[in-house]
Image 1 (tube, helix red, strand yellow):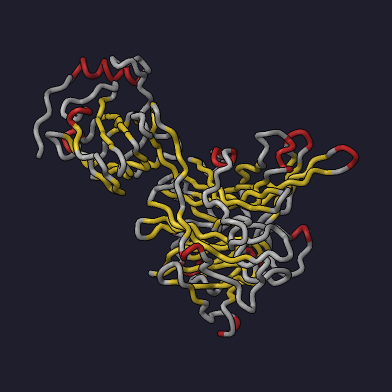
Image 2 (image 1 turned 90 degrees about the vertical axis):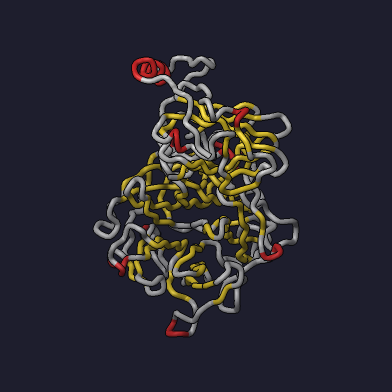
Length: 497
């Protein structure tokens, strides 16, 4: 049902209010209106404050990933593969109507990359597509990951990979290499098989030195928003210590290149970093072992392997960013891994190495991980591959308990007439009101006119009001949304045409 809204201010009066609002003048509600943010028709995740102006009685919560396959591995090493390093670095994505996986199968010197397929993401086969039909080994390289390049027009370069070299190489050559493929099975190295990075050193603060390496997860991706390729590798950090001893830590390095195919060595450093928020001694209890980047709804998700030197555990954490380099590490410092280790004696009791990507399928996120049962470099350690799933958009929520909470968005120009919300209020209630640019409730879309949000648990809930089923009459106007939460978790919102 759609009615004409009551008349609102037009012309000069309206313009004065908008100018005051966008210059930070307090609204009649005593608020300051922030600058417009770009929302458009893109889903807005609530992992950060990009779309959020203010909150009351609301906190961010990390989503709960549910381990699949009855808590058992979905891939285990066979007689040709090395249990100590099996699946420590790997890639999974959906392609050609099925799940496809590339994983580290053997260690020094060959670093064989195994290939596997699955229809359902749980039950995997190893097709004999390598060694002339004798095995499923399709490449050799350390820390290998690959992806389907959506930017590529040449079918021979549709798949691209980053890796460290296999075999006996000089230390100076153990830097990142790149390769391409038409099918993900038959690979051709870029740059005649030579390293595309030099194993160079960076002078960091106070004598710290970072040396680029490639002996953990290497990743190449295309960032469509920035129109660049991004490359992530490991850094080794050293600095002088007392009595001649050196601090040796691990870091992460990110680089960009607009044209990998035309200039595979044309990389520009973006950032090299290590965990140091707690001071120079932090490396003794926390190091970044590897990092890959998964881009979803304009948010960069760092898939981090975080190493604890004292006990050899490695945990799977996420970080978020809007630029692919300045990571929010809040969950790391809160000691809240995305996939907590299993109980003692379980296949993942000693932690998890995340896959280079997250798979989104059937309204779930599939988080694959290389699992350890004993710990890093324990000679009895046996690695397997597990998977957990997460509610769509469910990495982080804005949540309120018994005490009612409120979240108000920054102002944005409404690009469509339908509002879609990912929310779990199965034990409570969600209500939505719409405000104008100055923060005033719009008649017809106020809180007391909102309906339909009690007990809802929906990935695509569409709110309504007493006289309006959608926001069509507001399309093209600058608005803010105000979400009222009671025992509810709010994950995302989206404006549709």
